[in-house]
Length: 260
Image 1: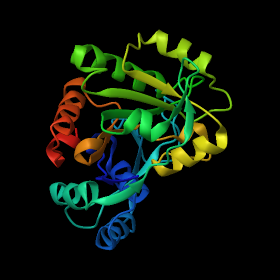
Image 2 (image 1 turned 120 degrees about the vertical axis):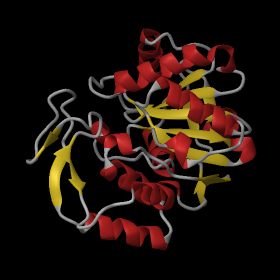
Image 3 (image 1 turned 90 degrees about the vertical axis):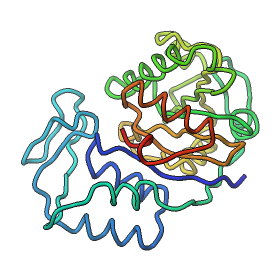
């Protein structure tokens, strides 16, 4: 199934995260040139993708979440951030192939990912694994707070999906128990399955990684019926996440609402 996909990220977790999201989703050649020009500039500092206030002049790990610090590249001249967000983060429409692979939900039910969970719906998708002790609990906590904030809309107007990046470990039973910790309600589905099929799915969604610890902290928000797909920061403020979801539900998306 082909659906339009607009990649977005957030300046809150540094310029490198925005550039990474754009490259993962496949930018227009002109956008790729902009990315190349930016990444060719000198690295002056390193910052944590999850805690951008944690900075260092040397490589290392974040004392808060233990993730590797990523280089923050600064161009020789002044950068117009609004133009970069518009051209790199928002970009042009790109067709994304979503495989209708068989998956298992937290109840052990066999589902087809696209036709059962995505088709005709508005969804918010994040990526987790149950043994994670760094970004996954905060990602789930964000969904839990958005779930509470949006109330009855969840399971009716919008659906949450948490996809395991470690299907060999994350059985439906483990996912159900993990979701219970965050009071996951109706309309929030946890997904695992055969590793080969899950690898296809993660790759299609731009979330394939060689190490599970390196999975993306982004959230994919989509309105399949209106062909609106975007990507946002998974640890954004709750009010900002709700705003992005409501805009996508209405069939609109812009850089103001997708870059916290």
